[in-house]
Length: 330
Image (tube, rainbow, N blue to C red; front, side, top):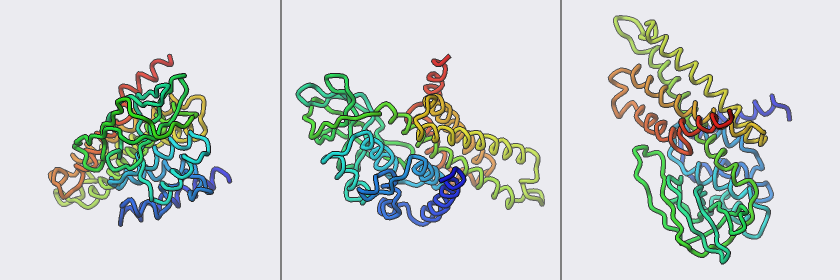
């Protein structure tokens, strides 16, 4: 399949996702649409697709500011399990996630497994952990090898957020016995995957606010003319467009780098996450201003986008943290 074919496929997926999410964003709908199992192998009931298709869904979820468990329960959970070889433990988990019978979450933090199989560590701001019935914990064993631990008995404490579209929790393991320890390959890449997923979400937020602001500027009149005809409003919208365009390019490059495991993937991810998430806060803030007084009301809904964009900015690495990663290259 050519690049053009993939572009057409992604455009179709984006259009379908936008239509579905405008009506319903429940977990059952995401499962029925096949989005939860996009990266699950076909033999296990999934689509056998790649992270590129998942990124499209993440962007549309951001555009709709949808409240779902997709980030933790699908993007990260399936990503963790795909670092593990086929086994009698892994395969039923992937199949269960794809068909919606298992709610899982990935716990990305600092965890270790002792020689006698006991898990110790802590992670904060773990997406969708409180709703999960299976927690998947990437860790390091006593030999220094990467493993994925399937464990019960972890301490999960929900964390309150200003952003009500997200659910996060702290997860702690204090020497509990692991239910299963699976050898893994590619654990380090999971943080890049998480960062790009959030960058895609922020890009969707920014695109939605740009479109809403332009539409509002066309219809809202002042002094007998649409406010979009005023030079100050035109310049502000143009600035938003440039910002969104740059973010879109960086996110596209980072997504491709993650899919291909490119040599420069760390730099591509750092640029996309640092720029796109900061840009979303800026774009949503300008949308709030350009909507005038109505923008500050609950009815406008812009506050939902602003809170989500603000949380995305710090989730899986702040812009400052990712820029430090870039600076270390030089």
